[in-house]
Image 1 (cartoon, one colour):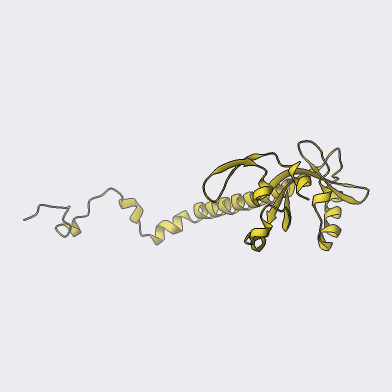
Image 2 (cartoon, rainbow, N blue to C red):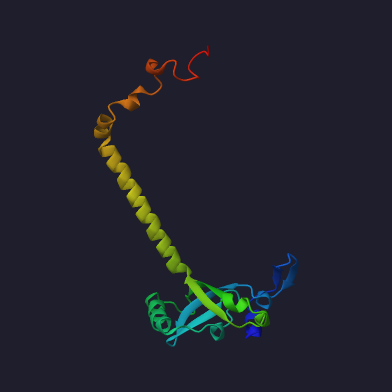
Length: 179
């Protein structure tokens, strides 16, 4: 319900469509809400608690059938407990079609929830960074290994840098005098 979400989200300045600013709860204006949460398994149940005050958030989140099977396994594999939880950014977004209906304005309904496990995201970002580093290092080493062959292919063009080539004399306006 709206009151349950309000206790997790403080009042904040919200810019309205008419460019006025009001200090209110985001849910009253169908705004998206993002809450940092701890996530862990307790007695086989996935638990979401508010990161700042450890308040239970499970009444706000309903997992689909695939997530309710896979997520506990993932959390147990990571040894996520109430003492050592994983961290998530839980985002509540109002359905775009429901926002268009004036009667739905500020009703606190039609919100979907998504979340990202911070630790998993960090792991994936690190893997991507490592593959980019390995690829660029390997490419750099290949260039060094084949440097002599590459110079041969360019017929020594890089060795002529800074020299004046007289062949094009007079064909460029900047090269000589204008008659």
